[in-house]
Amino acid sequence: MSATQPKSGVGYFMQGFDLIRVKGLRRFVFVPLLVNLILFSVAFYFLLQQIDVAIVWLMDSIPNWLSWLKDWLAVIIWPLAVIIVLVTFSFLFNSVANWIAAPFNGLLAEKVEQHLTGQSLGDSGVMALLKDIPRTLGREWTKLVYYIPRALGFLIIFFLLPVFGQVIWFCFTAWMMAIQYADYPFDNHKVSFIHMRDVLGSQKAASFGFGVTVTLFAMIPVINFLVMPVAICGATAMWVDRFKQPALQR
Image (cartoon, rainbow, N blue to C red; front, side, top):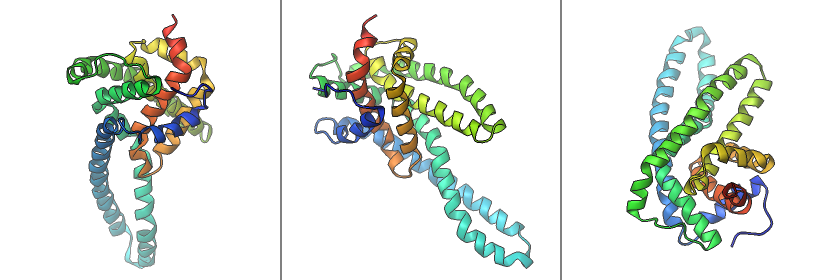
């Protein structure tokens, strides 16, 4: 059974690292992890090639009398460019991976809940997984429709208001991370997207703390490969302890 004393949002995310290693859950972690790893590796390889082309162009643009600057830039730019790519594109490719792995993410959330509560959610075979694909992809579309107009508005603030705009963007990203991963156990119980947002909003500290932690870990190279399954497991533990009762009491 899950712990009786609810954790903080940070605590639930960290619990996810323990859950992905639980015997019986590891095989359900494999597909989300593999999807994330393949997409990010392919994209990163492509982007590194583009970085190489851009750096060569930059070096050729520097006049010969500044040759000393070329050596200095060669040492600084490459590591800096790699770090920027890792941090910036981790969010984009995690979003793409969530679409591709959505049915498997829901299955992982289901198995984690079953592990924590000892109660089965019903049929979870291959046919059930295939049957749920339209619904899970539709749910991802709902999240995207919710995200895009708000992201555009916050991006305008991001560019117009230095510091404040970046803080607001980070907070919005953290909120979306909480929505993205907490939604899987909610959707498994057919809880509507609107009601799910209301439940998360009723416990803002835990929801936002969880989202902030996911966002920070998603910015760490290599570790960000694990963020998807860890966040799903942690969000499901948070669902069991904090959200399940208010979400199902309508």
